[in-house]
Length: 303
Image (cartoon, rainbow, N blue to C red; front, side, top):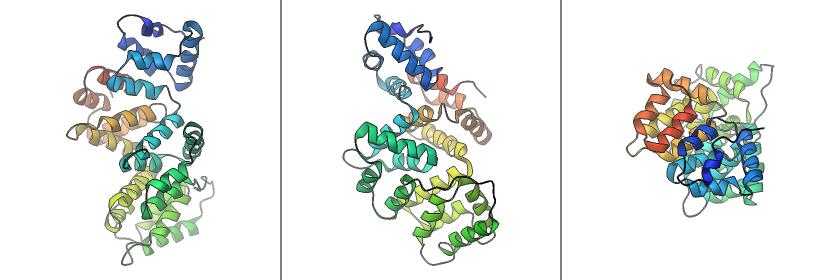
């Protein structure tokens, strides 16, 4: 039985935000679901509406995000980025280019369940050109599973094909890049990127910057960075978001909520290694109030 200590606070006069933070940030999604079930059993009221009426602002956004499963949270963020006027390309790129094949399969299923819409169709309706082609190739989840067999011929052929389709020619054969980068397994692509350097004077990230521009460049870069070191990609995103003028709270919230049960410890480690300061200290310096407290609690220790 999950102890409900502190959860009844929602019904009392004067909300105890710190207890909400302490209880819900230190549990897994599965445990939070159990707490919500038990809360409803005892109070005959649903916990999420109670949290909504008890909280506000950034704290509410984080806590309600934690009450969703990882796939529900990702699906909601994707839906938010393409719903209504205009598209939030930055969010869409981060979500689709950083998720594993297995995560994308689950996101697609949950998206349909939650919104009664097809993710592939929504992405197609909201994007265009090669940018759309790349995102749709990822949504189709055709990436190969990692294999224990290392195919050196295929590694060489793919490295050569990436070079021939980009740096070697005037213009870029984007279709070849999309097919290789969206269909090969991550361990295979890491070896391809290494081999690529024997053909090209630039590494894969530099090649992307030279060959394509705009949203397509951002998408390919995100994809390559996540293949090379996903946790470093997220550490960089957090650092940029917190240190940019008018801190990009939305980005910080999204990464902290979506990665807290996936790889936040590794992101913390990459953050400290690359920026010489802990994520914990950086959050302390760039946020305040309840939002700071909830983020620090999710972050865990100070490295």
